[in-house]
Length: 176
Image (cartoon, rainbow, N blue to C red):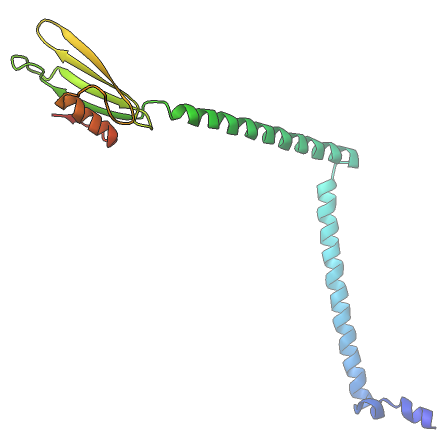
């Protein structure tokens, strides 16, 4: 008899057997809902898998993946080659003329139209040259002076100095 008394759930939990059955029924309903949700998700996943694999066997899928890997390797090699070429171009770019200064002027008082000019061309390191073209009635005389680090070892005329300053300041305007 004591054994039967111990099995009495009311004594163990302090709950009536009707309430205990109701709680267990609610837990079963929740578990059934969870199983249904899981089955629906599995069906959706299976449909997506079938759609993905439709018309393809394992071998064709493997070929597609191998093709994509080869394309990625080719792109990687191409990227490395592009980086090398860009590096070479940037090195060459350092030696191209990037800064310009030009001043137009009248070399001689009897001439009009500002046909003479001084043109300074410099690279990134301020190395380059100045071309001075002086126009007169007898002809045009052209002179070139070398510029190293923004300076000339030969004395510059006023117009040449102005063209050099324009190039050093990287402002191109035709001087008056």
